[in-house]
Length: 348
Ligand SMILES: Cc1cc2nc3c(=O)[nH]c(=O)nc-3n(C[C@H](O)[C@H](O)[C@H](O)COP(=O)(O)OP(=O)(O)OC[C@H]3O[C@@H](n4cnc5c(N)ncnc54)[C@H](O)[C@@H]3O)c2cc1C
Image (cartoon, rainbow, N blue to C red):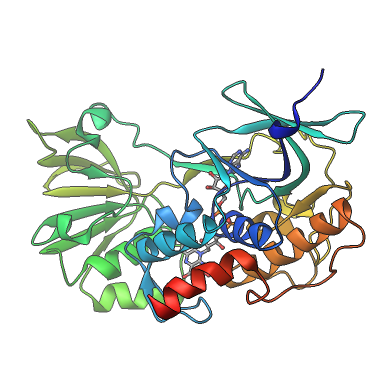
C-alpha cells in the first residue's frame, strides 16, 4: 500500500495527558511533524479526575487547580500546532517494510508515523466504575456524581460519599467546609489512604460509616433518599441526601497491552508498564515511552517526572530519525517560531 508523504508524521504520541502534551511541545521545538491521538474527547489525561484539587508540586508553578493545569498544559502542548485526534483509542501498532509505523484506532482509522511515543499513563484509558443499583443511570445527570467538577454544586448540601479510597477521603476533606454535612460510607472496615488524611477526615467532622453499601436510590427528579445496607448486621435503613458522590474505582485499559494481550511486542515491567531506559528507549527501535506508563530505575511518577521523560523521548526519537541531530535538550531560545511569539509577548 502506498502512503502519501503528507500522511506520514515524524512523531505520533499516544495519549494527551501531561506527558503527551509536553511531548508534543518538545517535538515542535525540535521541528518534528507531530500528531497526538487521545482516546478521550478532550486533552488533559488523568488530571480530569481532580479538576478542583490544588496541585502544588509542579516545578515553577504556584499552586493551581487541576483545571488550570489542564488549560495551561493544553496551551503549551499546542504551541507548534500538532495534529490532534480526539476520541480514538489506538488499538494496534504495526511496522511496514519501509520502517513506517501504522497505528490503527477504535474508529478504524489508520495513522502513519516514523516514530511513536507511548504516553498512555498508568492504567491507560480510565472510566469510573458505576454504581450498580437500579435507577443509578437516571440520576447520573442530576445529583449523583462520579467526580467533582465544581465544589459549589455541594454547597450547603447533605452529602453522601460512597467509597473508601484516597479520592473519597480527599473529597470528604475538600468539601467539608462547603457541604452542610458529609457522611462517608465504605463496604470494608478501614479506609485506604494516608493516616494523616484519615485523621483530617475525622477532625473535619465527616461521619464515617464502615461495612455499609448503597442498596437502593429513591426520589422523583433527583435522589432524595438512599437505602443503606450493613453487610455485617444485615440491617437496612434509609438516609435522606441532597447529593451523592461515588468513587468505587476505575475501569482501566490501554487496549494495546493489558493482562490479556500485548499487541505491541514491547517489553513490559510490573503493572503493565513499558520497560524503558531514562531516555525513553524501549526494546523496539522507533517506539519511545514517557510519563506514568514507563518504568525504569529512578522513574518519578509525578507530573514533574513526565516532563523530563517527554523531552528525553523526543530527543531519542529525533536521533532515530536523524542520527546527526543535536543529541541533548535544546533551550527554547533557539527556535525561530518561538522567536516570533516572543516579539508579541515582549513588545506587544
Ligand atoms: C487523584 C489523583 C491526584 C493526583 N495528584 C497529583 C499531584 O498533586 N501532583 C502530581 O504531580 N501528580 C498527581 N497525580 C498523578 C498525575 O495525575 C499523573 O502522574 C499524570 O497524570 C501522568 O500523566 P501521563 O500523561 O503520563 O498519563 P495520564 O494523565 O494518565 O494520561 C494518559 C492519557 O492517555 C490516554 N490513552 C491511554 N491509552 C490510550 C490509547 N490506547 N489510545 C489513545 N489514548 C490513550 C488516556 O485517555 C489519557 O488521557 C494524581 C493522580 C490522581 C489519580
